[in-house]
Length: 239
Ligand code: SAH
Image (cartoon, rainbow, N blue to C red):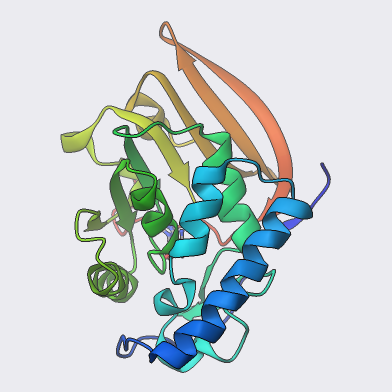
């Protein structure tokens, strides 16, 4: 597989209200969503029907702040700006990272980089317990609202530094990092259960996805496809 999956970097300002769309709009957008899922299935080879169902159901456009929503196509095969220089990942990358984690219902999953809240909603649809950390307070607030409006009120969103993880709710069955660190965050490896797995876009000059699997206290590392994500920034205390 040789796709360059773009999470992208954009500079538009975001924020704003979350408005439910009319049923007529919903019809058009549902058709676009079906097209997006068809591409995931036929072109990108995503096979997990639970993920394809979740992506058919979750209204991706609602997670993009209203004033940025129609600037790009929310259902296009690319990332979209969500304001404050951040982006919602390309649909393929959301599907792919989720698929590679092989999640089972009831598992506990930590996401680093809540962003729009879209990946968190997909995880919630899969019946896993979702904990998600976002370092930009305005984005965390927007994601919380979008998740609540769409009925994903069981998703826990923390405003904070993902490098520290969420020790109170660890250990996790899976950790999905959706921003790019230069080193594997060791605190997060420590918060993985035995049998747990983690996927992250590691930046060693070139960015690629890396999958870690913890078994009997040992961690195995597997390199995966090239990607491009926004950087994982350090919190104010620099830890
Ligand atoms: N998963 C998101 C896309 C994330 S974009 C979605 O579905 O929309 C990457 C996000 O990571 C940005 O919102 C950025 O603010 C956040 N981020 C960057 N560094 C972080 C850190 N140290 N801890 C938590 N979030 C971080």
